[in-house]
Image (cartoon, rainbow, N blue to C red; front, side, top):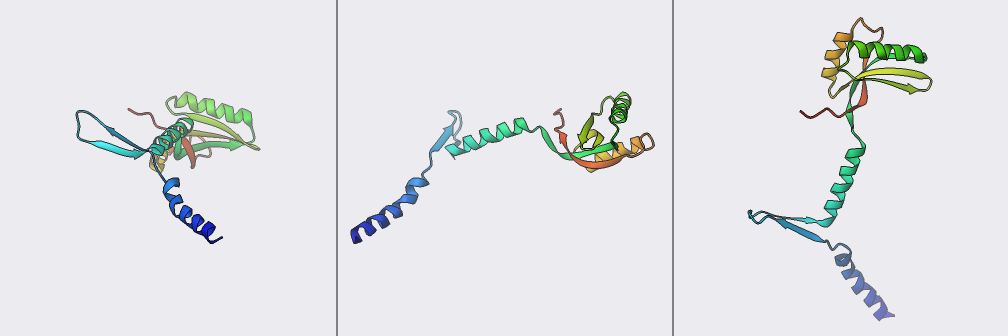
Length: 140
């Protein structure tokens, strides 16, 4: 029995070395003295993050809500009216039971949203800034 316990203790002492062994990848260019050594699992994590980034094309930001109510027809009219006046700014019609919302813009900062809100004052009865997930800005 004592030899069995000793065997278990010896095996458990060497177990962490086997379970935490890493597959190391070394990359280097022929025209450079720089070589990069990394764990192979890093490539898998990077690929997983790339897939997640392709699925989610939004970032936290702000929009301006110009309508909130139960009338779908009125919400559609307000969205079309806005799109006619500001064709370069995106407008979104969403439904959150029992209300329809018309939100406009894809602003990454509250400052940008406030600047555009000044242009909308007096044109729509209830306008205010709301936090929302907005589309990623286009790269220039």
